[in-house]
Length: 468
Image (cartoon, rainbow, N blue to C red):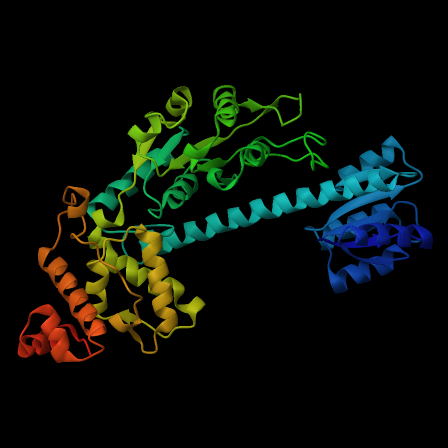
């Protein structure tokens, strides 16, 4: 839905256009002359102004100039019964979004308006994404200047493996090569893609993301390459695809392993030729886009009968990166947890400023199958439940530890090693709490379930700060 101002000195024309637009779900208001229209625009705002060209006192071109000067974000559609090429050129030079000559059909008018609204929405999407990148760049600069440690947007880490990732981003961002990011869900593949874009020569261009796994095959074709009016049922107007929207910037293809074979062929052609045709169209459209793709599938599975084309794989697998799971960078759990407390405190209306040692041990003993995204969700839930200024174990949701310590279950230890005492203490604390829960808080019964003397149980409960 858009808010549209109509300026026309013919009552029947104003009323007819308002009725037509309201039937299509838009909010409208109108004025009988340019001066009144400018007053209403200042009072109510609008997404689009539709103005007649020939009006007394203040004509359509004067309205257009006033809108461009005082409301630059508002688009203007000029309509007239006195259309000439000269007037059309003049209106477009002054910044009109489009020009329509009377008489016109209701369908022609509706198509013009819908195309303008779609274009405005696409521009707003790109504007927000660019603003998000500017915020990320500001956070990065502030973090480095304040000595808080290495920060790349939302990526935080001091472990050796993350320092290696940050150095890799710095090198890759300077190039224009295609990048393929591998990693489990929740490891931050999109954050890496955004950091590469923010550090590249394309940083002033758009960053456009497509989640390939969230769309059906037909919808993904239209989303990536766009479509012409009538290309399929429901295609009521031409639509630009994400490749076109990302022109001059970066296109991030998330979950690229889920792309269907027929779409893979079209994608391969764009990567090779740097041009495309919209679905249902014949016009060849050149595009200048850097591709960053990501998948949670490992390389061997991607090429091992998954249906992913080998030629497309090698077009994407130019500069690869595998992001480490959180269980392989346990040293980063404390700094990540504190980062999420700071980030989410305002959203959750929490007064928490720190995390207790017991709570941090509980976080460190968990394997985090959902990786950094799961840690962020756990911290957010804990902040919602916390009453004090310190986040404690009681505020954390249940964290079911694996049967084996983190890293051991995968068949090999973490590259950065592990703290055996911390792991054993974490599992011991979990078992103590489970026993107390099962014994309904009766310490003698909990001691029996664990095969401990009551005195030993009391000592361990005090050690971990557990209250029955």
